[in-house]
Length: 284
Image (cartoon, rainbow, N blue to C red; front, top):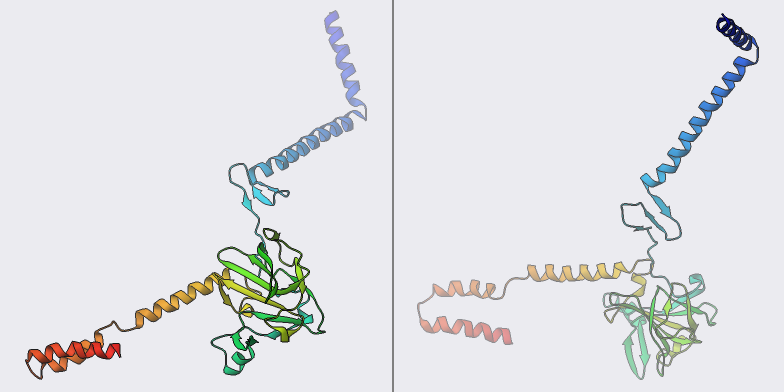
């Protein structure tokens, strides 16, 4: 009986507890807090896992990578040949490159007179519009392979860009770089000066671009990447191959000329004289 009375007493207390107004709101708020905590925990765990699955970006190295793949370099801007001056609008070309395909008038204007001899200009000669000296900068990044004073050309700086491509600057003064130095595009190399070779230009700088030691017209490659020179060489080789393949094989015309002669007679003398005559014409 006592146990039954005790149970009934506890039951009535619990009923009184749940009849209080603040009980159910408190239970509701506690449940909502638990649910919200679970949702936030799930979202945070998902965000942390995403970089591991999709890969991350290493800003310090400039590469994008994940755990399985090798690092891939971020695309870099390709340098293009530029006029070797700080302000291209402040200069002008005093003498152009001598082009074999140019008009006679243009070729005459591209001749340099030195030591009583006219020579085709192998680059361009640049002067400032106000006649004063100006800073000469690297047209393209590379390694300085020559920095010397030449008695005829003045101070000369040569920069190697790789793949047989070099740029050459002469008629300089106040040279700032030495052999073996690495220069970046736009870095100052020297100041414009004078040279005995083209004394009529006054204060100027002579600029060349060379492929395997052969000068090319710099104006054809300004604002173009280094690869454009290689593509130019490939195209030139293909044109030569195409021209060679279209030329008739040696002896084709001779065979056609010999065919009518075979019907005129069976003399062995005529047969032997024909190739001798053709050889004589070829030598002549």
